Every structure is written in structure tokens, then in C-alpha cells.
Image (cartoon, rainbow, N blue to C red; front, side, top):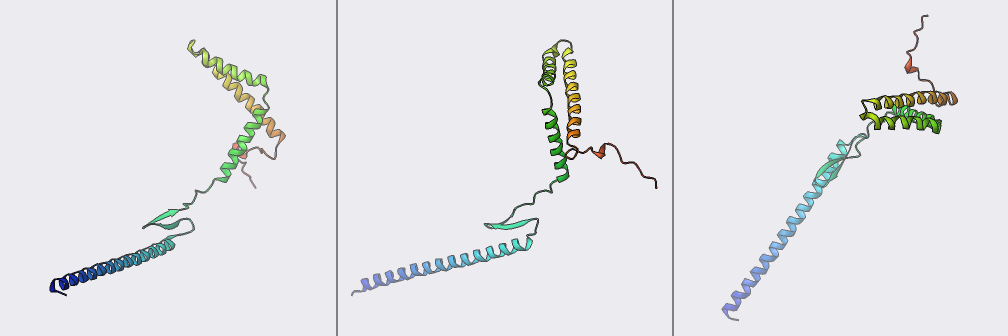
Length: 166
């Protein structure tokens, strides 16, 4: 073997060694970054577990912490119950209207809407329709309350309780 071929072989060997060293360094750097990522994830999971409470739950999403399952505000059960009972009462009272009464209210309001351009005459008709509707609702709501006293008790909030003098 001549001198030139030895030099070429040696250069090839050095280049192969350099590439192998680069591959090993890249693999080691990748393994180190993967280990650091696992440590970071474990630390974030630990922080999320430490900060989580019954009302707020934290979880790791990528490299950040996020709140999940934010608690719902407390439901006003008493207010909800009142509103549902009130809507049931209104609906049941409305079912008691006769078709003639229904058309009275509708015709007064619609006629009033069409006649508002005649010097405000329509406003009186609209007012009459609204007052008639209110009177019918009051009458039939009282009827529904009389029929079902356990479902629709008379509210004590309308009149303050009398002070007892003992």
C-alpha cells in the first residue's frame, strides 16, 4: 500500500469516528432532554396534585398547568323551586281560559296596535287588553290555588307575620 492510500484510509477512519461520536453525542443529548422532560412533567404533576383541592382541580397540559372541572356556582334551589312552581301555576291558570276570553285579550291588543296612529286611541285598547289579561290571570290563578292547595300554598311573604305579645 502506498502512502496516499494510507492517508485516505486514515481520513475515512477519522471521518467515520467523528460521525459515530456525533451520533453518540446526539443520542446522549436526546436521552438527557427526554430525562429532563420526564422530570419536568413529574414536577408539574406533583405541583398540580399539591395545589388541587376539592373545589379546584389542576392538571398538567403540556408544559403548563390548567384548571379543569371548575366548580359550578351553588344552585339557588329555593329560587329555582319558586320559579318552577310559579311557571306551573301560570301555565295551569292559562289552560283554564276559554277561547272567547283568549280572543278578547288578543283582539284588544292587536286592534290597539293597529289603531295607535289614531290619536293614541290604540293605547287605550292595548291597556284594556293588558288589564283584561291581568284580571283573568288573577281569577284563574286563585282558582288553581283553590283546587291544589298543597302544590300552591299561599305565600306568607305577602303579609308580614304578626308579632306575638306573650
